[in-house]
Image (tube, rainbow, N blue to C red; front, top):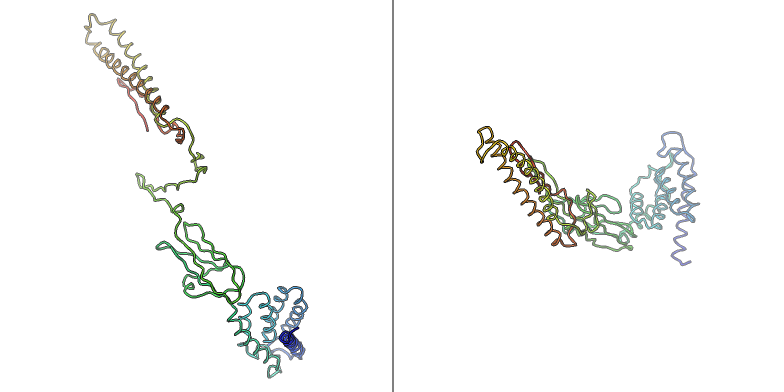
Length: 362
């Protein structure tokens, strides 16, 4: 053991002995600065801390902390601060040492004791010396936020502790060891920076908040009637949309194919129906008209027959064109084009009183 370590050991023993002596003093009735129960509790906690110090330092720290709360003595405070230091909790140690410097003697003295002991005075001086030494050992970080969008409100945490944006103007003291800085902005994925600091080290932690183009919210569109919708962001390959349709390309007929054959089917229906109507009217005219001369009562039948005949011809022509378009779509559809449901295009015939036609949606 070096002379420095020997001196430290002796100093710790003297402080511990001084505390035991102080706690052993007789107490007077009510009105004491430290109650009988608190003094007894502090004595027991301190003894537990000393017993556990060699085997379980975190638990020993908690025992000393409890004793210091019950009896804020500089002697207990120096012991607590020493354990904080050995655990790498330099910030907590400095706080305890500063408390030892400012605590008044009547806050921990027993009633009837006018002055604090020499051990307590020595502990105050020791606390001051240690607090000054820690100033050079405590690391610090400066957090810099770059690339934040105008009007953004970043939320910063250091080791899960919220940090006001105004506090980022100066370095922040931290304990040695591992730390994590997380910055969150609504609409963006959190940005994280993990690092480790040694005693006395200073570091600038820069967090780039430039929005990722893939995370930018799509622009809102307004539908007729004032309804507002937001377009869906592009999905990565293989991702399934809300409708359950894979966004990845797949082979299949193009929309042109569906439209062509849809029109062909509708044309056949119109042509067939109007053809039958035209044949019915032609039969009526043939039975009641001689040499294309019809009585006035059958003029409408004659006109309707001609009209149905014309529409039938047009319907079959449209069907022929639709077949051609459908075949062309099959021949020209690239194998990688995304398959689209047939519901995107629909054609329906309609027949009314004296008229027929097609309706569709594309």
